[in-house]
Image (cartoon, rainbow, N blue to C red):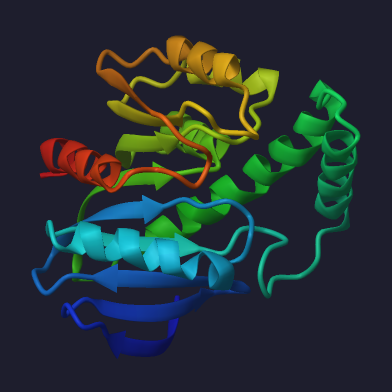
Length: 242
């Protein structure tokens, strides 16, 4: 891990950009250290586009004493192009613009390779982050793509709680993996999400084997998550990471 820039935000949070091989990322740390760590998941739209939302989540978490970090997903932002992923996105757009159902084949091609590539990268980032003196653990995962969160919850024992954002397509194979998830879960669902299959999100929640899991559904579309939903998610991490 190599830090490439550093700035102090208005609320005192230290923001540092880093690279991990070819993977860009950002780490936010509060003044109090060492701090528990929350990994900030996000859709594959690029860190620059997602930055306003990510930094808001990071500052909200820092106010409660958490460090947060995120990395660029494969094929996104300034990372090398990924032709197979671009083709899957093109197939998805074509189906949606034609008003056709999104087939299992499209969903599998869109999500499963992304999960297979991204999760080991998150684990490598976690190795480096936990070696820093300002990071004390334990670790939580917050956000989407929800299938990435599911896989991390199954294969990464250092992740001890997760806030998962429903709203991305979920391959059928991930429903089986969901049955292996046992860590505490806090799942956010936008009830009127125009791009999400609500029933599939409910079925996925039912599939989780966690003894503590809660579903928080709010009226509104994909980007209409209310502010208090973030407050509740932070309270969830306060219970489980502190």
